[in-house]
Length: 242
Image (cartoon, rainbow, N blue to C red; front, side, top):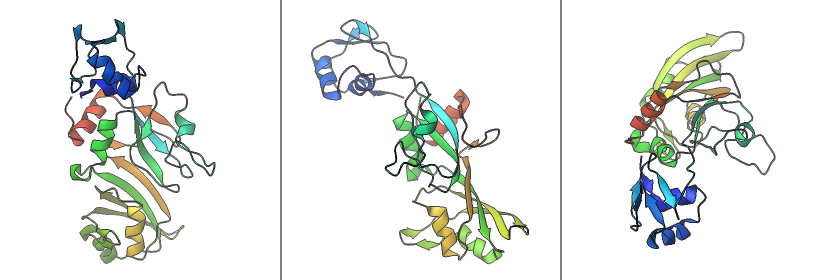
């Protein structure tokens, strides 16, 4: 993936983006040994960049899978003093941010990265990246109610796209129906609102898959770095080359 040179310089802490543009115009920046004076120049991750003959330190792209517990806010700070994602990433060598959100009472899979282009691509509705949730609702849900979710329901912000719904079990001890639902949209509190619509408000909600990624082998509050193949799969899903 390529980025504008002035943006790379700013991200490396060389100068503000506006100041970085002046460095380029003044001929102070070299890419792979060649002076670059064009502001529209794009550079790849492996390009060797110097300013006044000194190499810049570029922040390595980082990709993590995090199992968010309930009771954690998907932001880097919270005015109410609640736990946030920042409490879990403070020891990472790179600054990362969450891709999308899970609400305070929802647990499960959350991607963390410093790759803004990838995050934007994954969240773009036209790319239709699947997200699967495990849902627990009170009582026995009739099949026709689940069929409504499969077809799509009318929320206050429009009809939902058809969802894939798999009935798992009825838990007699907890009087709860469990099912998995896969959607590719990313509306605010969408699963909760869909279940409210059919008359079965969510009791438990966990995101268990995002694209090809799952929570397998990961415990609550823990994270792991994605391998190269997993990152490439995400880039393909986000329609990003390189």
